[in-house]
Amino acid sequence: MKRTRVDRGRRTAVALCSLLSLALVLSGLGGGMVAEASWSARLTATGVVGAGSVAVSVGALPPIAFTNSSMTATAAVTVSNTTTGVSPFPAAVETEFTTSSTDQLVSSTRALAWPVSAATECTNTAIPNGDAVQGTWAGGVTVNTAALAPGDSQVICIRSSIDSRQDAAAVSGARTADVSVEARLSLHAFAATAEAASAISTSQIYPFATLGNFWYNINPSGQSGCFDVTGGVNTAPGALLGTFPCHGDLDPSFSNQWFTLTPFGGSIVGIRSAGPANRFAQPNTTGGVAMQLRDTAEPAQGWEPQLVAPGLFQFVNDASGLCLTAGVSSSPLSTQECNGSALQSFSATQLPVAAPTDTGDGT
Image (tube, rainbow, N blue to C red; front, side, top):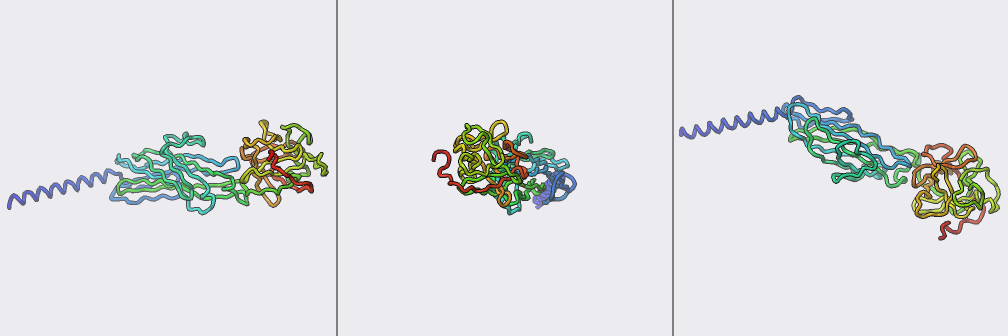
């Protein structure tokens, strides 16, 4: 019986030592109940036990802006383990790019995220690594990266893109959807969350609209001039497209002011002249627009007509995303960033002449 009492005493001593060791480990996880972020719309800390805690911060998510000429945006977001105290233990990190918006814009916007070693690697031309996660902003994407020790950070690239301008089009030319990035850090029973809010927006992107299969005079908004192939109906390929006082004559010898929109597929058309026959508007290398023979391998001959107001169009070049732009008086046309000015708005007047009977490329 005496031997048995000695064994129980030893077991009691061992149990007390174990409890003391556990208390020391817990106290080593850090002091103070903290959860902090240098840029955050919402910040919480949960699962705090005793005197221990963990903390995380997430850097700003830059606004994502789409225009006709820019349908991809890549940014860098930095997530940091900001835990303080004496704990050297790394914590698991999960970063989610998400939204609560129901706008069509977030369903149409692709999201591609991947971890990198430096923010300078987050460019529109960067090739994502094998850890990349993709989806849409509506569905959200979550990146799980290597555990972070206190004081360490992880940079994550987030690329947002739309496949088609019409996926982001709006009658007003603009739309906005709120999005956010949320970083979650966890270590055993400890957890912390930080969130940064941002938005996806569009500007000067309008719904597609086109004209019927007829010949038209096309006029810059507020001007009396008409689209005009410089040099007349017999000029060679490469002649500039400009504006000139409207002839007001239906004789074919003045058909260098007759134009139609020839379907190329989807929302893309060609701006085609009647005289010279079957020439298509194409930006040249000097900032102007020339009339060239049809080239099916040349995307710059494609234009997207967008309805900016009843009876008014802007013509967006499919290759560059720039808008066809008139001068303040009779002058060559050019392509410039779409800005909503009257010089980028055009009306069309149908002409009482025989309609086009082919597509202008021999078919």
